[in-house]
Length: 387
Image (cartoon, rainbow, N blue to C red; front, side, top):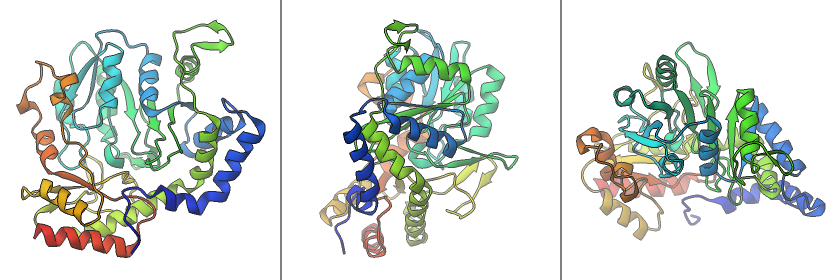
């Protein structure tokens, strides 16, 4: 059995080495390192894949969130609602722009923003909602878009973990994650389902005016060189990273399929263990598959995250490491409890699901190169320890 990796980028690279190397060599030969032809080609290819009018590449996923909020013209003190159980980048940019973050609890099944908690959090100062499509599963966008329409709110999709996922609406129509709200953002961090070999990110929108504003913001506020029309930042995807992403984009659906297959293996292996809650797919409030099915692609398993319900999560974490099985706890501390984001507005009773998840979740190896013998070893080790 090969050594188990949390993310096997070397194994993935070996299969696309020629294509990636050709792209990198093209950049080196032309010396078009910033905004070169490959950046524009990748942008066009991603627009076609997502069926979205505008993709604006940028330097990383955190920048993408910040620039999206800048583009919408949010002002100091405006309230932005997002999930308590996620990576800090989502709330970090809200605070950096001197907006007011409002954290709410998450759904116990999907770990995405809880719709009832979201409704209760809306005030006259609320201007935007940031649903996070956590671990690769799309949030309940039917409900979120209805709420946003009712209260005249912007929707900024944090799609850093779910690129490639489809959301199936109640009427049966589908859209790619990140293209549903006013604006969507993603990260191309190397471990993502579509990852480059450094930092990278992108912003998506179907709004022509917003896209124009954002294109200025990412480039120091310039549309014409040395003429600064808006306050901007320096956030550009470099050509080498675009070349890597262009080589990987045609394989994204197969990458997501491989992750779903690994997740299906995990779920089958844990199905009869009463101390494990395995992830399921759930498109919207009325459509719960109860399994990882072939017809629903609302979950692309950026992470495969279990709940260990018998109090042995921390012991399992250590045991797996001792057995040579990498694993991680995403996330060990809720955002509302982080020193940087504590606020007297929050009560522990507001976050029952999040407070339970931080004690029970554990994420297992998840990538495109997992082999059957590795999956068998991982699942047998877990079941034997938990039982």
